[in-house]
Length: 318
Image (tube, rainbow, N blue to C red; front, side):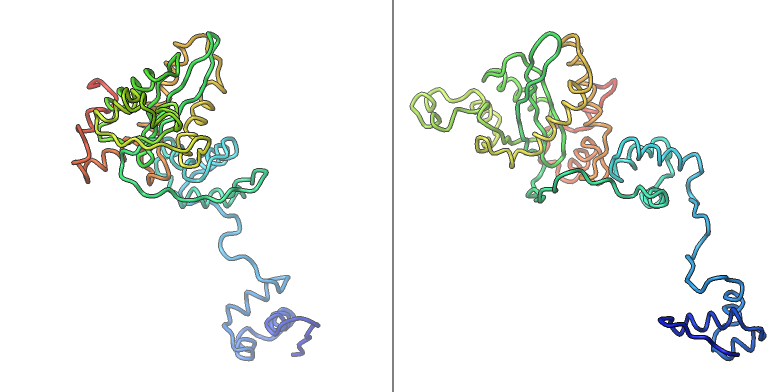
């Protein structure tokens, strides 16, 4: 049997070509080249010497049906959500969907990676680990057909539990009332971290008047044993979580819908925050909701809590 070696061809390719053109028996060729007769039979049937892909010729899911796979693909292309967010949203409809089966499905359809947005991504730094109770507080402006309102937002940097209120005036009394409501709503001891709307300006903080009267927000913190920390003015990097929460709330409410009255906005805002705290599963919490994470912390560190968080579950008992 003559073997033709093409320029640049490897020895393996030469053997494959020789097998394809040979008329000798399978056993003879197998002995000559030191390979299995099944390999000889396989290469005789092929028209090319290039390696073929292993596995099924038409990849399909062994977990998902054709209809379920179509739902997954349509959801991903429509929402452009990350893998874990897609998983949490789709598991309500497809209970047997796992993270690995979802990832394989997206890979089969070439949509496992989200398209890059314009502009370079800034470097990310992880927050220092804190126990639950450290709240970032911030103020944002929103509008309805009736006029302007101020949105007070507080978010726990660890549990991601959010608390919001709409007020008509952003003054010291409103900030103090907001803190009172936050203390009543949260089942554990809290600390605060926020800007100058909740404290005297730095240049006036050490003056005799400020020392005598004290800021209402600071007096309230002192009454409840809250450690009040201040961020630097115009430096939002340490307050990024609440800034991002402000944007999330605006994108889900005033930037998407028109409200004829303040009352409509208040109702929708209340529903959105309840869904966020008690239903939205977060990747940073290992797939738990903010409420589930708080309950888990209560089991591990009950000394940090002022009451059993199960009492705050939405329903007939609230």
